[in-house]
Amino acid sequence: MIQGGLEYFFSPKVSIQSEIGINGGVFGIPSGRGKNEDFSVWRSKNELKFHAKKFYWGLEFFFVQKDFIRTDDSFIPFKIKTWYDTARINFQVYGTGLKFGRQVYISDNILLDSFVGFGIRSRYREIQILELSVDQNREFSENFFGGERYGFEGWDSVPQFTLGIKVGILTGRQD
Image (cartoon, rainbow, N blue to C red; front, side, top):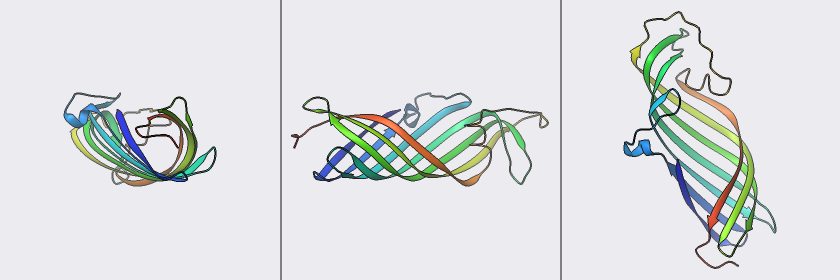
C-alpha cells in the first residue's frame, strides 16, 4: 500500500492531518493477500492534533474500503455455516480513536512522528458467493486474529490499538 498525506498547522498548538492510502488493486494491478485475490483497498485517515511542548494528543477518524475475491472459506448466514470455493467480499471499516505522540525533527526538513493510540472500529461486510463448495461438511481452522473477520455479513465493532512511526517532509519553514 502506498500512503501519503499532509499536515497543516493552524498555530504551533493545533494542526490537522489528512492521509490517503491505496494499493495497486484500485488500478486493476493484480494483487493478492493469502486467501484474498483481486485485492483492492483504499483508506483515508484524518486527525485533529493538539500540541504541547514535547508531545501531542489527537482525535483520529478513518475509513477503509476493501473489495476482493476470497477463496476456500465459509460464512454463517441464517445460523447455517456455508462453505464456498470463491466469494466476493465488500468490507468497510469506520473508526475513531484517541492518539498520543511525539514529533521530533531529525534534520531541518525531516520530521519523525511516533505515536500510540486506542479506539474503536465498526466493520461492515457483504459476501456474495460466486462458487459454492461441493463439500459442506468439513472442518477448518483459521488463526485467532483473522478467522472470523469475513465469517458473517453485517456490522460488528471491535477495539483497536495503534502503534507506529511516520516520516514527514517539511515543505515550509520550521518555527
